[in-house]
Length: 162
Image (cartoon, rainbow, N blue to C red; front, side, top):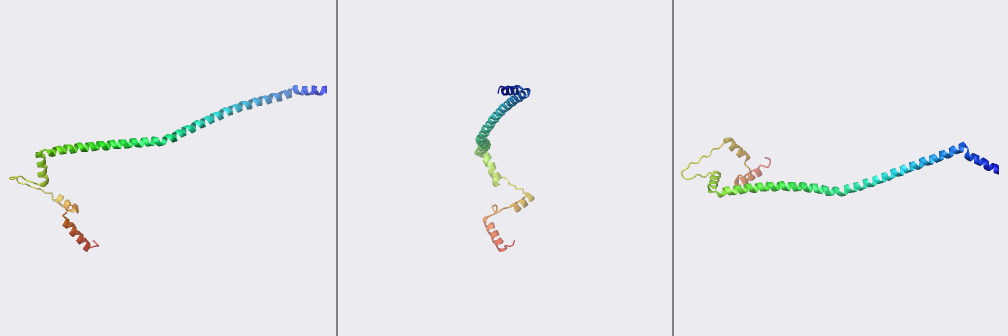
């Protein structure tokens, strides 16, 4: 038995056995270091995934309010432009009202529109034949007397094909 123990001890301390043990130890160290690296990588990947998830959640949560904010800012700008246009129109109307308060301006405009002449004046109306022709061709139903419109309707009813 003592011989067997010595053989085992020799095998245990033989070069091949030592090299095999050394290789196994090295392999274990390499495996442990790779496992640690992979664990670090997986932790970083997990953290990165969590960070990406949080960022995506924030983007989705803020997308609608931001869109609403931008559209409301556009509406506000449109309303400000409309307000400025309305203020400009009010100012023009105030100026026109002030001009109409002046009797000489009102008299001038009335005489111009109604072709009125004062006693002792001679009134002249000059017509452009081309403009008169255009007026006749452009004359709509609202510009003619009501009885002309009625008579035209009767004429059209007599000739349905025209």
